[in-house]
Image (cartoon, rainbow, N blue to C red; front, side, top):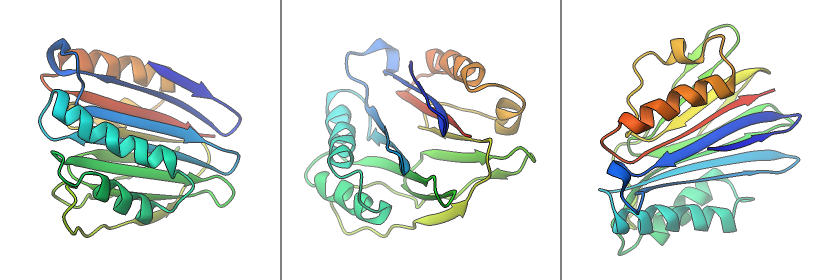
Length: 197
């Protein structure tokens, strides 16, 4: 499990390969600067080595261009998947100074934002996956409040009561529960759980 904390955020993330395989078809990338946080989950189609190559190509291109807009990063991610297996991709970029975030997703990756007032925001993804073919994206922008929590996860995790999971629990407690769920999964499973302070 990867854990990071500073004065603006606290975050935990991990991934697990299906059935203990050597290659995990999911990849993630997290980067923070003084101005923003960027999180990416890419879920390569299927599992195994070819899924890994697709998902890791996405995280690598985002890592090389993390300062760009979410729209451009989605386009770059799509381009890098040309003649690869394809991947579901979600990109979250949080701007600390304006307390806003941008989010875009193509495919079955889930994102939730949970506030102190127990409001749950769940932006709907665009169906399908990125594969290098022409693709429409829907980047949404939201304001956030201090002390809110967010959760990004691939479809290898089945979470039925998100509010119950996020309510009145620390990031590390939530991550511990998610760790247990990844061990039960019959698919590659990845999560990023964070708190914006």
